Image (cartoon, rainbow, N blue to C red):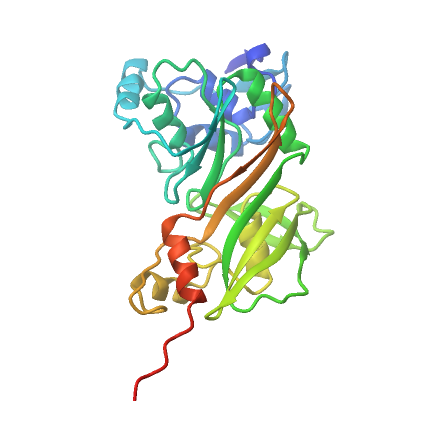
Length: 323
């Protein structure tokens, strides 16, 4: 059994991130597995991956057989360096436009993600850490801290819901104009393969967490509705499940969506000549207070080209048949 005492550098970190920093060479899949199994204890109690550790906490982990540091270093050297479109950058933080199909970090069958590629692209950077996460299938604004002080300050804002987060989502069907607030509790589980699944549950469900999304109709056309969704809580898969349980799943959602429609979209059969093979969920706006100056910053990421093309096509009336 190994024990770690959290120091000031670990103050406020999520348990999973703290362990990945301390357990050099440990695969992320292993870290999540020992947390889920209850083998990791914080101050002698069970803890979840998103538990925040504090300076002085005692973290106990089971004996682990870790990869040789030289092997781990060699694997890291194989990560291809990559920069991403920059929306904002200063000495405290970096905001990028993450493309769809790219994980934010390695793990769960993904050998590397945005953060590993950024670190490889910026070998002189002393500190680069994700402030928050986006699903692999979701595009849009992603914040990366360049200082520990910026990381803790920004994560505090996310926890206290002091950020404004709005997503563009294209859903199947005609969204009811009157449905502007979704206040439905969510319950997160793991399936047999260890994949996360989220379910809408009753408000009094013992494992449900209250979740609130605000919805505004932006455009209708072709049997689809483009929505702006502003989240007041930040639950896993919140928007995807809220819209699906309302009867209007997101186009291209391979976990909670309409698989027949997704297939037709990807093959170019839903809209002849136009193939769309991703989930239409895009983090388009993020507002927060700068971690050093306190100035309010509002960032915007335009729709990716493939999403903009689809919206233009849906807004174009079909041409009349020739006689």
